[in-house]
Length: 409
Image 1 (cartoon, rainbow, N blue to C red):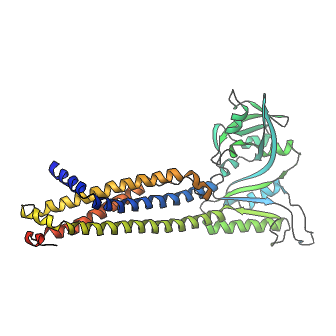
Image 2 (spheres, rainbow, N blue to C red):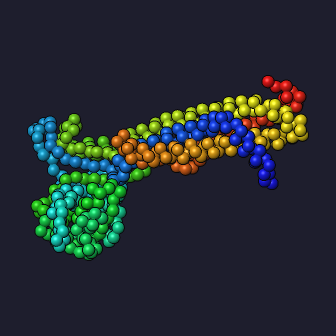
Image 3 (cartoon, one colour):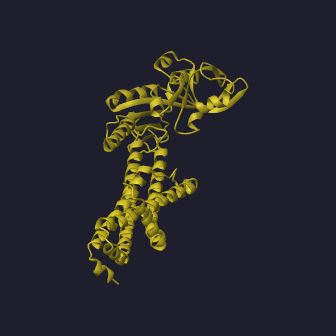
């Protein structure tokens, strides 16, 4: 049952030995404070890495064309490489079992207007699979489909901010938007985790763009995602295979780095994964090193406290106190000090991260923070350490004969 006298005695002991209590609490609070800040910064760096790849699928590969810089097979340097629909079909057929999603892209700028509102936006002509490469989330309506490609329909899917810019007093879905003098029906509105720039884009069927803007079959880029079951090494080998095949198809020298450029997200993902893992290990070692230092500190202090109270323990035993009651008093006092100090250390650490968080973006640390479960776990670890640190010397002291304890200097 709850023993009021026991708790009153514990708090009186803490109050009468403020220096000792503050010293014990400071050790714990400082350990939790450092632990919180270190893991918060580590999470902020991981958030920065994650944000850099949030817009595109992590298993994406982008194939771009350029100009040759070296003569090859009798062909002069300076040739302009241009992709066509047949090249898109070639990639799709050649690597079909290794491809998850694939799309071509055509890039344009378009003057968009609705009634009295107008603005200039990036216009992308794409295939239906593009939705999954860009992680586009349909807010209303639908995305471009195969029927739009087959019939070359004049439809568009617009970003959330395009709707906010142009459709001030009405909903965009089902309305017609003017793009550089041509009317297109809005069949969908999307959101994108990539931020405002991505939500100010307009997508249309690639066949419609080819028909209306040049009446040709040229494309600017081929984008795809590889089979997610591939590991990093397989994905990198796949990217190299695409590069080799495409260079052979256009008679480009293997050492020519500009004519055909293949950007494989697996390279960045692997590098970020290795960096994040290394950072996590370093922070984990430092963090737990801090906790161990806190454990050692509280242990030493508790040993000193018990030694200091040896005479007190002797008096208690002489007055009839049981060894169990003596151990309980010291143990509960240790736990209370450790728990309160750990909580304050947690609050201060979270406050520091909240205060300096916005300024850390300059150092590529985004939204530094730490999960409550992690810090609570660390605090519980210190509380247990404090309990053990108090229990062992208290147990030993409780076995001392009263006459021996009273003679202790």
